[in-house]
Every structure is written in C-alpha cells, then in structure tokens.
Length: 111
Length: 114
Image (cartoon, rainbow over all chains, first blue to last red; front, side, top):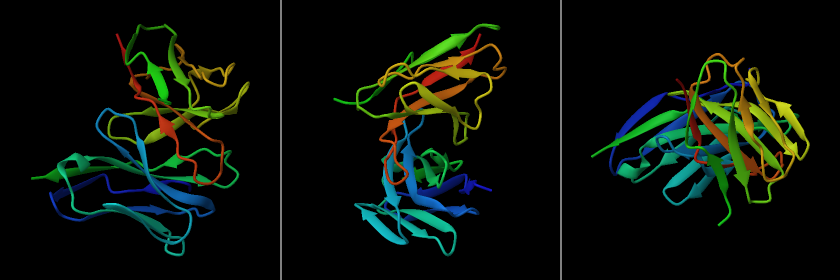
C-alpha cells in the first residue's frame, strides 16, 4: 500500500551518528521529505530528496534510493536537543498534493 | 512574522457537543490541511483545501467538518459524531504543489473529553 515504515524508537549518545530509515512499498511519488517534531510541538521541515542520492544540510543529511524503496535521515554529532520524533513523508502522484506521513521515530539522545 | 496560529491551545469537549478549532495563516498559502495525531502516532489527514471555497476529505474525515471561506482561515469542527475526539490537532499550510513545498505547521490544539 501507500504506507511508510519507520522504526518506532532509536536511542543514541551525544556526539554519535544515528540513521533513521524509512521504507515504502508504493513508488510513484515526487520526493521524500523529513520533519522533526519536539514533544508537544509543531513539526518542522528538515529536508527533501527529489532524486536518488544524498542531500546534506549541516549536521543532517537525507538519502533516497528509489530502486531499493527506501530512504534515511542521518544525524551527525548528536546533541541533546536532537531528541525528538522524526517523520518521513511523501506526495504521491495524483493525490492532490497531500502528504502521507510515516508513523514517526522517537529519537532519544543520552549524555 | 508570517506563520500559522491555532487556537485555543487546549480545549475540552462535553458529550454531545460540537467544538470548533481555529486555524489562521498569514503566509499567503493557498493550501491548508488538518491532521490528527494520537500519542506515539504519526499524522493522519482529516481534511485539506487547495483553494478557497473548496476542500476534500482526507483519510479520517468522519465526525469532522471544515469550511474555507477565506484564504487565511480553515476552521475545523469536531462534531458529536466523532466518538473518540481526544487527540492533538495540527493545522498546516503550503503553496499547492506536487513537488517540494514544505508544509508549515501551527503549534496545535490539544482536545480532551470532559
């Protein structure tokens, strides 16, 4: 179907690198987006991959491989403030521009 | 500063009561969206509107209604037909596009049953 699968929880320590995967079954979307949401707050846009490959924005990078039906968000030099939920999302063709979100991955960064 | 304003931040509903959640944006965006988020869950689309005076049902529209009389405003009514309304409600807006047009979110309204 059109669901996006993510791990529910990930734990890492400060300064480490963590990768959050997002897999899907149905292709035919414009690109893969990532959003960050701190507890009880508004989701904020992090990155977008229209094409296969790696997009880098500071400590965060995002990757998409359409042939392997997955993407990931890579967070480097983890900081305590990175503790949040991370959602992948796609816009499928002929869906009126609406975003479909994954269930989210809760990242806990420990000292 | 441009942004999206949701009000109230917290809302309590009595049995059989309709309540309306406000969403206003000054980003000049044509598209607006309403999502429901349950604890530990992703965002599920309730309704969306690509242009004034037009809106479409999302994945979980039953028990909800919307209107889009002005570009800036997209209120959501949670009707008494919605039997499990307790959730975090998020409003978003964007430039209508099928490519990379990020959605901008409000700070949400947390609705509870009395």
